[in-house]
Length: 458
Image (cartoon, rainbow, N blue to C red):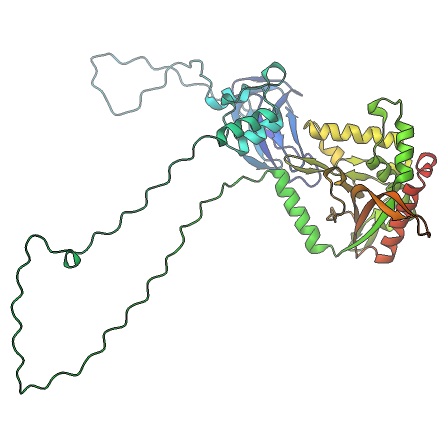
């Protein structure tokens, strides 16, 4: 039987972390049966056994990481070998025998009691709750689950952390007592011995020259007490990947930033009219309209739907737009593929599906790959304007701000009217494009959003 190895769940995956084992040594494993839950640099997902057999050894324990293709467990001893037979039981020594220092021979195999780690593995908890518990060192057996069937969810971990945070902090260590005063400086005890009278000076002896008293030493600077050590939160694989890729992009990609303000009045009116009477899952959002507008503009300006290569600029044949989704564990960007061929309704349905999978921890690595452009929207947080870092190997990303109702001049007149304005900021790789082309691209996005019927018929 082959060993169980760390699978490669994405083209850029280098290692994975075991979140928990769904089987323990001695359990029967069937081919295709979920055997473990692993965390990659993008997702937390269950992996299936590649073959059937008896799980004889767990090589990589929960919380530990292993590179791709490394052995993480063994079936039937691994590589086709059968598990070693247990040693034959040794008869118990007679009571009259003298004690020896040798370790007792192993007795016949007995049922092994589950360890606390195994007990914790059987507790029903969501992957996100398990990750939070691991990061904060929480024993899941101490947490009361409020989810379906007693399942522990994220809110239970947060409630436990809040309750733990209210416990009294340990009393500070007492300050060291001052050093005892030297006997020569101590006050005299009992009655002092009268000092002998000083002899009269000899008249013939010359008086010594006055000696200046030694300078008083400056007081030693009082050092401030050391600051309390901070709490170190281990980096998840996702956070490590975000840090590595964003640093790579910021250091290696010469970013240029171009912003434009869009009047969203017509788009909001069309959205309200189109969504009226439709089921919630069939409605489309402002972000869906931005994605659709970007898809049309990227067809007109293919350099923004490209990647930089050593041999030249690689223009991608399809428009695959990644949408940034904020999670507690980090930022995830599932990809809506073939946006150039999708209707606005199709983009909205696919976006809802991907966001739901990401937030439930059920998204698969293939849904996070192949993006050629990214849309990042912080408008729901009240952010009016920001810049985003390009996701390698893409050439550009669009930052979307909140829609603001502000007074503005109507067309070229002096009349002031209320407008719904939204700021868009494009981050582009200056090796692939220039400021003028980036500005033309943004103007095309602006045109499509301000004339939103084009999004429905395009």
